[in-house]
Image 1: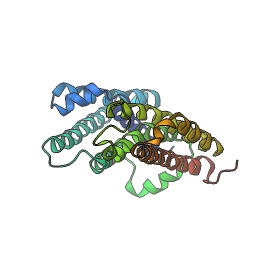
Image 2: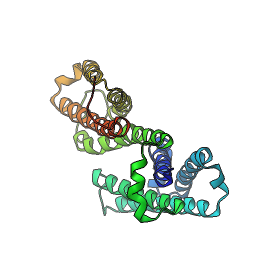
Image 3: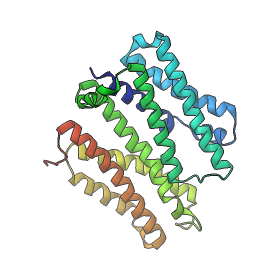
Length: 262
């Protein structure tokens, strides 16, 4: 059993769920205001997500002092990274844009990997050997969950940051505010990326065309606006690209090839 990969995927799944699924607008608002309660709630969500997954995969670890120490340390470091980003953003040192989002996620990715390594204790010389074990059943399930969560929810944040400059200025659609357009796009994007990723995983690329056609028909009246058409096209292509990227990973792992047979 390749415990390092399994532990990393489990911890990273908990991170994705805690950051992109269960981090409410209230928690985000409290964190931006510097309220301790927001950070504590965010910490509780992450800690609870890790323990929930550990309860299923490694119930014996729950009573391990070393495991609890690593999980608590990971949670604290996660909060410090979040606090650092928010603090620098609020003081104008950095911009709340795609670059800061990516740096934030890279730091979280790195800390999760280190935490997994500390928990399992795998020698560094064996890490590359462990990478060959992704085809194990439990690790396959975890990888599916990680990719789906990252593509559907993490991809939404990525698209939002990359299209943010397009929403500045006057409303793209008369009578519809920027927030309304952004929220509608977020929910549509979730469903879109789920359907595209699933279609490609099932090796049915033709379904992707149907999804794009349905989306275009639904927004056809608004496409007469040049600004909205640009926003719609860029957002859709970014969203689809994210789903295709996730599909490439899953196709390679599940089938051993990214070629679509259907």
